[in-house]
Length: 220
Image (tube, rainbow, N blue to C red; front, side, top):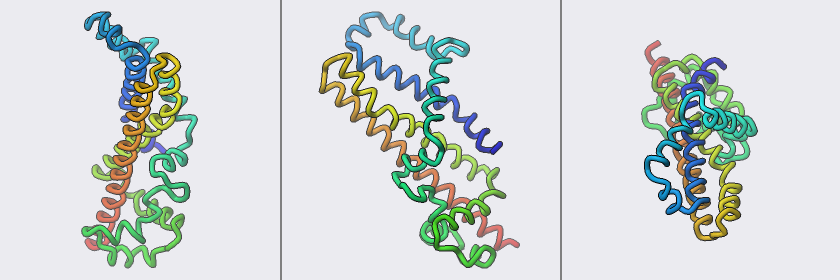
């Protein structure tokens, strides 16, 4: 739990930046860009800078909004959303039946000598992977992949939650279906990019854990 909290604390700035980015993009779409630019580059810059000033009311609202959005979706649902899998979304559920055997630098024979026979049930695989992962969670490569996965997952989750309401609000504000539709499409693309990144980072973490575990068994 302490590790997860630490990783989330490291990602807090990125979540805030995501909220600021969504706020800025919505304002840009909902208002006429020419009118927004008409206020002057200095005026726009100062307003955007005020959003991110520590201790400001704007930043406080952004932090609260991000906490509410992420708090509304439990971690299991975030994993389901980002992996687009309802049952056993985490790659640890396929660590010993698919990911490990398909990774060239993972010594499955050594792993099986210590932890085998490997279970076929996805839930049992995920439980075994967690036992293997836990002693290695402070390894730099494992920790970095895990942190990046959590960041991509949470940014993708926030974007998924905003994909429908923001384009609708933009259309109500502008009456411009084409611009609101393009805005919605960009949000979908952003979510898909986050999903791909999160999947790759989680896969890399599983591969790294299995490779390290196999190397440790061989050394023993």
